[in-house]
Image (tube, rainbow, N blue to C red; front, side, top):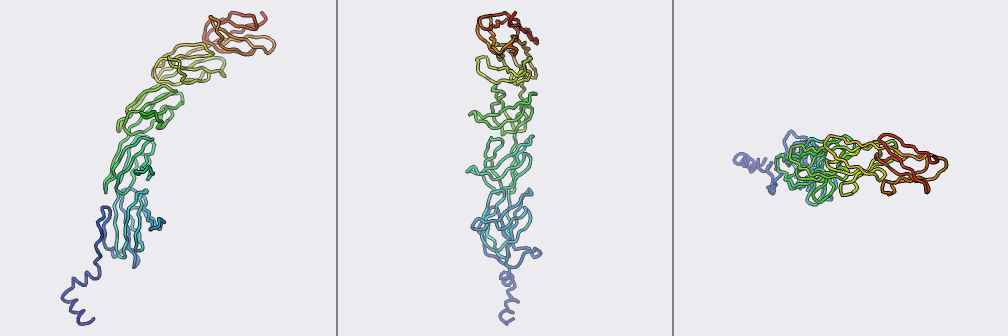
Length: 360
């Protein structure tokens, strides 16, 4: 050591320390701070290090200036990097960092958790509608701070993720109760379908008012944060001996709602309905948790050949027709059977087959 250097070491020790370890000033960074790499860190000479902290087990990804991924690491674990400018991504939310030799850059994230009592997922979108991340309800997501759109079953709300904070959003649930194995549909106020599920299985939504549909019958339902909304259906069931035939359900204005094979139920919201079987009509009322049953009878014209017979109501209106020796179902009443120019009177009783010989 020269005499000049010796004097500096004796009288200006702070200067030697500064020359060996001081770093240049870094621009302000709301997410990151800059310190020396710890002496016990396993970082090669000429490299810097990056540590991204968060409350989940997610990974962070490091991209170079061309957008190529060069490294990745789990949150809260240190990653060695060559000096340079990088983009760091956590669940597609990015932040710019500059790595210098001997410097540890420590960045922090924020968290978002959307709670709910179903197995649905929530999705995080940026301002352009691009998906950033998704997770099952009740599990948190780590993100760099910013403004995002939260989506649950196509319902949306704006959320703000803050540094080192956990933002919490609560959903509510809708369940339409029923026992037919059919589906219910949930729509928004513009009649756009949001999602659907099987009866008796709940769906999660952000708080709001929604329209529920079951077999084209509708009810409104309010969803409140942390609460379960349940609406109960009832059933209509038409029984008959001709299982290959159908019954049709309309509202009181005649608008078609749905149809089903005889002996299989249909679920509806409570109300008054009309039920048709081969153009014979009965009025029905659906109540919660109840099944209103109707029983048809069958009518058949027997005889040789392959001709057709026709069934008419008491005013002469044709209801339906079939080939000889094949039956038709109707609601109990008096009917006229026509074969060619001949007619016969017939009584249909519930649960019974009325057979008429065409030649007697």
